[in-house]
Image 1 (cartoon, one colour):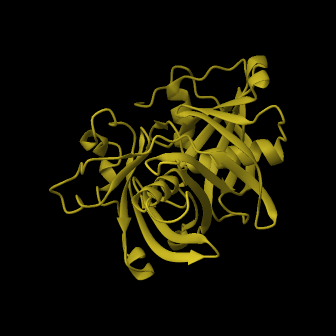
Image 2 (tube, helix red, strand yellow):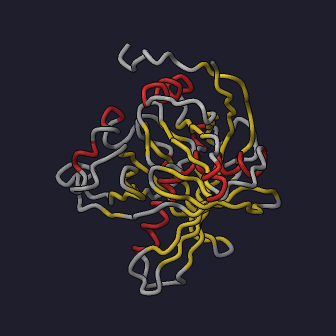
Length: 306
């Protein structure tokens, strides 16, 4: 038996730009093991692969669409480009009116259609539990950089750089690519899960009330567009500057330029009325369809170690 898949380039309107995503549709009568899903994700070898489960009658009543998100190495609770890509798929390709909320391991993610630069994309409310860690890499050369989790299981070192020339120089995560999935052991108690990446950024100032950021994400490899890290960075900056400015701040994050896969990620952060925490994070972007086909289901006897 084979499953239908579709690939999208996310955070772009141009094919072969943005961040590629595979969406694999899982019929209601098919149950995939963790190893089977991981093997399929490893076969695509993209930043992430989404498994979109067919709605049950209960899902339809609740307007839910259940998804699992896998990198080529492990399952993750939330990620930005898979949720934006899947939202665009449901809204503009399947036109599935029975779904308004993505159900992720990090929690429910409501989404809706959004007009972006004159064309239709998607906007979603990011599942968030923003946590700034207590200098987990103190004593190392990179120990002074803030370490921020957007949710438990998605964490980044926020590395501010002075110029675009400096942004072009990094070739690897400050933690080492090989430590992307083990560096979690240094995080705060109760937060030791998932990958830890280096998110390099340059602040280009504001244009028309929107703060412009240029970024790169280096973990196990470089990622062309990272909605979770972008959301975490924008939330961190909003909290850092919480005493000044409006409660709601808008950001435009451009990533992937150095890879030839320019991506535009839009983030809106609203502080709570006391300016002590985050009330809401909205993430928005486009996605363009590229490929479709069938992927065979690995044998139930197949394991990752074979």
